[in-house]
Length: 133
Image (cartoon, rainbow, N blue to C red; front, side, top):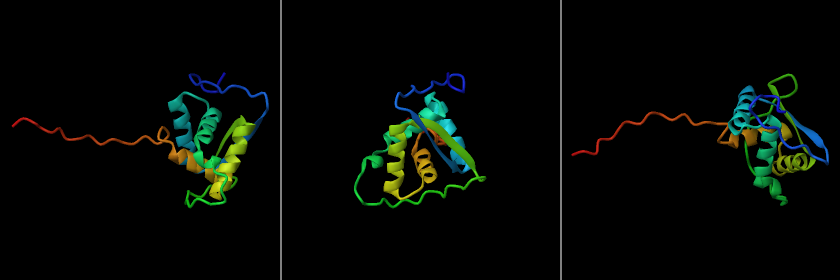
């Protein structure tokens, strides 16, 4: 059973799990929880979904991508974003962070910031156009 009612829990893995975690800014922590709620899954499953969708983690080239994510925070600052993920997902997250040249915490920030479901766009009301002549 998921920790939050109404959310589904990810399937247990036979190969074992590893904790994927990092201290992130409070707004990123809140966005991650919004993204998980929008999908109806636990935060651990949400992190798995984001890592599995990262195509850069498949890149084995030595080329580093230029990206300037927000600086992840050290212990005692910010909020700890964590989830128990499958070993293959953990390895993929490490690879994705290495290709980008960032730490895991910064990698989590990049993934959450890129998720449209965690970042709802506020829509401004549009003026009604009159098409009658």
